[in-house]
Image (cartoon, rainbow, N blue to C red; front, side):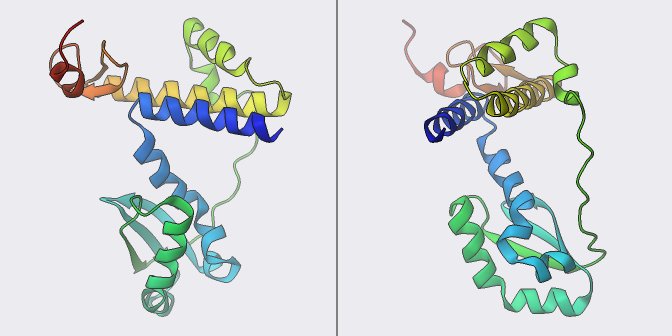
Length: 186
């Protein structure tokens, strides 16, 4: 089972790098992992709302919590960096606001990301997930791949395109990203 996790992780990491989505995903993990990084009491009084320019934005229930957490910032930032890497979050900004703990979304029979795929994309997801032997892990892998395809589609709608040389998503003119354009043609 441990080997299967490593394979799934490798597949997802490779897809994230190929589609140039790795940094955004790691930044999003900072928001998702916030409660586990700070503990139950702090998590109950705060909500990580996002990451902007590598600054984790955290809303506290009141000014006292925001000020207390600002004093604890070096320790909290160290925990975040240990868990996610030093290059993901460079600072944390605490503000007083309305901190409402997130509620778990109800589980759907089929993820929305999977139902929005074209038949070719669905087949691509099924082929990639078929490599996973464990049925439970296979379902998670399928969801992850479907999310990646949806993220790529959203980038393409914003004017990004896939490089014909390496497959990474890039913004610009031409058929190849800047890195591939610098390489001599074969």
